[in-house]
Image (cartoon, rainbow, N blue to C red):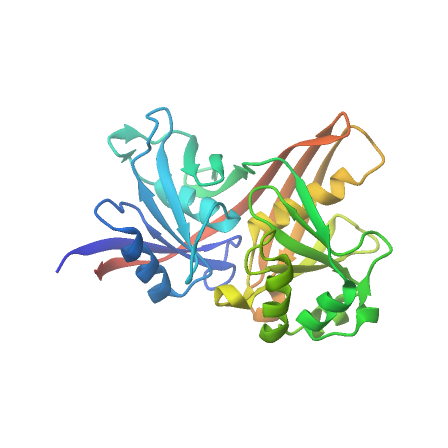
Length: 306
């Protein structure tokens, strides 16, 4: 029976058993799409990645990303974690591994820069969101409240209505009043099914990203992400959603030109604290660039029979 090697890594953390776990198959040649989906379901992490030779030799790899139920076009922690693992290899598909890697994905080419410590060991990565900021429907706050099992009065709409936005992968975003409201949130899968019927064409499976901004430091944000229809009741860290939120918030600033750094803390309520660094650049009134940075820790490696 054939087997494949795997590595797991905790992403957006420098402490093992925190952050968001990821399974990486560094060489997925010979695996079918069905094999990849079965393996992702077996790990049952929010995502698993499968690394293949690039279609364009100017790129470094073709990376496919699977949740337990489906393939997705882009995600943050899978890119950071995959780059962390591949960056420790001497070569990738007979090509030397450089300081910047280019991953072909369904959402486009994702550029990833490795982070190193003073001993030159790879400690994490910075990724560039593959798409421009796009926004879709606003969402009734009553629907958001029912999805999260909280009162409508706990959904804050003074800054913006709940909305679907994306820089590569679409999420529903809603601001809450305070950390108590965020802690009280519980996903109601039956209501998520309702939301998916109405908004699934814009945000498949209706992943919901709830957040609270610190009053004294508004670019320090606490968040939670629920995607029960993707078999992810809660995600410890969601880089793609963080990038989308950062882009959306910076787009709403009065300044036409700005470079904003932000920190998003996620997974606290799950006991898997994650820290996601953002840098968003706006020029001429448009968001031009979104960078997502995170540290990683290797957890285990082995082989799986397929």
